[in-house]
Image (cartoon, rainbow, N blue to C red):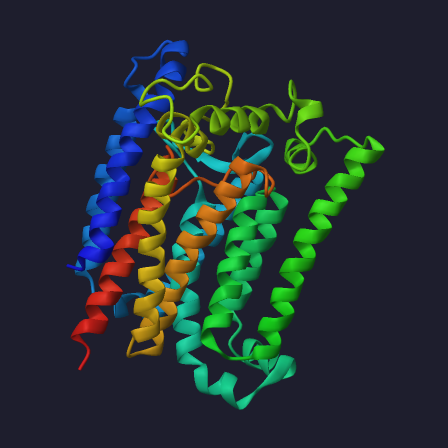
Length: 381
């Protein structure tokens, strides 16, 4: 087993368990539950996730290239997303959850590893086709010849917009774009996608600033989040409440933190302290030093996966590792961007650290796939 992947996974998971306990303790008690309510559930999620990761590790990574798996995965994810679009449980203005009574799951989370598997196979299988058809016309010509995978991904992106799940949409889109970049199939396509991403962020920031300046408002919770991230202080008692208290948490932590368990902001001031904003609590209790340690370990894992992708001896393994590394990179960037106000708050969790069954299981699946891919590459003659 590759320890450069496994050890960061285990250490970050243990840190996450500790931080979920301290960040959720006040909320658990205020809801009438035992102080360990959330951490016990997180421990169960972690246990199941570990088993899933080890099972995937033991599988041959080529299993996921079969037509049967691809068609089944596309069907299950597509049906689950259509279901949540019409019948999903609504939380914070988005219908992204299926309530199973014991646990609520987010199908969009499980679309992430499936998207990576599908695109890794797609770009490696049709690499010659893309090479023989350069440019935009060639790119879309190949997509038109083999429409199942791109069609499914477009469907998922469309449903993410309709839910609306801005974070899920952005994450799927950026992962797909980075995999296009990594495939090397068309520099023109990559340049245009990169330009659209930069332009999209600029429009988002400028649009939000203009809306705030003109006093525009909305009853939609997701839109309110978008409008508040550029300047949350005028709405510190309203929609800007989370971000303002995130700032207070990070400022209060300083260099070395208030000490484990001593957060002030988790005492009812910062909603989702154990979930989306757990890194703010990490900063408050463990300080900048604690944040740097966690982020250093996390980005070591991410960069190691990119390194292994560069050294991979098959296109499929290379594309798979690029997709997995991109997931960890973009998920963290979006979460930290929301916590610090550099990006809109989207509900994206921080892998291994944040509370949540779907998030923990998805991250574990990614680790299992990474371990399996690296083992397959090492065993390749």
